[in-house]
Amino acid sequence: WLKTFGSDPYRSRTGVAFIIQSVPSVGVMPPFMSNLARPAAIKAMGAIAVVFANSATAASSGPEVFLARSASSSADVFGDVERVLGSDLRKRAEERVGQFENIMRPVFMSLPQTEDGRLSAAGARYLLHRTFVARNSWFVRGLEDDGRSWNTSAPADGGLGLPFGAVPAKVFQERFARGMTLGEVAALAATVEGLVSEEQVDRLHAVYRANGIPESDGPAARTSDEEAERVIDGFMVTYVLAQEHEKLTPAVMSQLWRKIEKYPHWAATQAWVRDVRRDVVNAAMGPRNAFSTTALVVEELMRRYGRWQNRECDAIKKDLVHLEFEGTGRVLLHDFYRSALRGQSLFTEDKAYLRDLGALDESDASKPSVLIANYVNAPANCLAETKFFSVCCINECDSLLGAVERGVAAPDALPGQILEIAEGLPSPTVSAPRVLPAAMVERLEAIAAQHNGRVPLHGRLFAQWMHHAYPRECPFPHVSGTTMPMRGQEWHERTGAQYLANRSMLWRHVEQLAPAAALAAMRTTESELREPFSALPWTHEEELPLHPAAAARSGLREFGRCAALFAAALSLIAVLRHAADAAIANAGAKAKKWEAHSA
Image 1 (cartoon, helix red, strand yellow):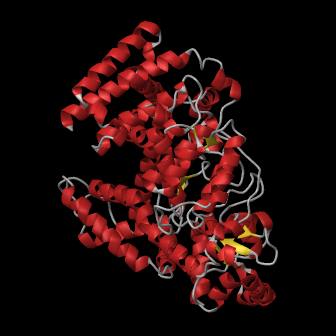
Image 2 (tube, rainbow, N blue to C red):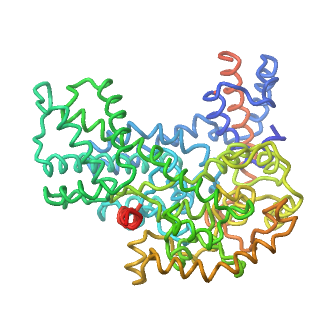
Image 3 (cartoon, rainbow, N blue to C red):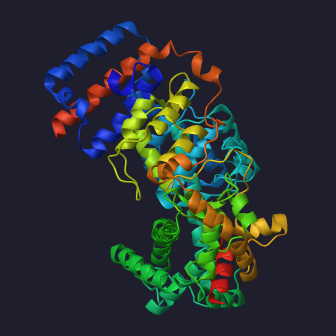
């Protein structure tokens, strides 16, 4: 136990909750716990629990109380939701909150918390963002990276961009001001997803009207297969092209049908839609073409679409890796633009726009380059869009960081713990196991030296270390305030400049950069070819936007030591008994790129 979680009560508490979740669901005991699953060990742990019970007065810190507090927090939120948004939305949200808690718990346990187990507003926003991306590939408005620190406004009212209204916004704002429990964050996430479902139904009604197809429901539904497919396709057209359904008319719908034909992946999208519809219709209780059945199809499409369309992101990444400069996770800007001129790619974003996206590395003026991970994850590659969220490329670094979070189950870790995990952690382009170079070890130890010997998992410097360890998957973390990532049309409206370079501009860039590109290739040293990360820039600015004030984490720490350890004993016994008995985009930008490429 001490080897894995240490004696720190904060880390022990989070470790307990992590094991409670992970062991039953995976069905396998971690190696260090295998011997503890025997009856004698369980009895010994029972004795330990008695000792802690006699020496501690805070038995309420046990898992039952933790879960009860989470449920109580959810109930409080849902009471507010029903009061201001209605009982129907409350019912839908309550049906989903358990799923959200299960998804959120591993990340929640790795985030800095106050002594009473609450996240700061910044931590709650970060958890919501990670959860929606992991669950649905949704980049919810107000939670996506805008170039500033995560620690900006709370995710309510203007922060999320949700039409809550003044009263519910005040409710959530107050909760964020005092910090949020796991149950409260999960309840808010379930509420947001419920609002999205309502918006989807409204969009579906609008598509029926715009296509002149009457709605019918129940056993007497008379909609034909052809009409149902036309409606579902129309829904996807408005979704992919980011059409506001409130403004959808028959004339606008006709324009959208013509416009979608320029989308190179529309035929594949239609084929995928047919497959999803078949799955839903076969399992549905009502008539196959009834409005209620079509609404179920649409809901399932929204749930699956993000991960399905991420294949386009994989294709973008593959093209960039093919152009990569010496294994650095970067493409020389010269090569980036030259591929577009040769008709091999759609890489036509203007240099200034790339800079504001945070996708341009100019640390070496002799060879400006495009950061592969930053470019793939930029708003320029977002596709479908609603008033609540966009569907963008899935950040592959999230799953890598998630593996570290699960392995550590705390907000920070010793360098050795992280190295052991990272050296055994593969990515789509990095093989494992591997031995990281000494310079990487030294950088990790240097980060720890700034933080009393431990590495904060959600700080800027560790994110930079992850970029060096996985340069094609983990974006380079720019210092807050130095970038301005936004969709192309938004950037144009903000700056007045064109975000896509025309052909003559691309030629000009290529001609200007050609000598520097040739010289850069000649300058590449043997050590850089052997260890590409050694050529990557490293900056020393640290940011810890998710950490609560130091005072909030220190005052009652000693008092909670016995209670946390007692809770650990009780929790571990419960887990061991279980194991012993059972044996765990912007549509506008896209359209312009399609049109430019077609031309």
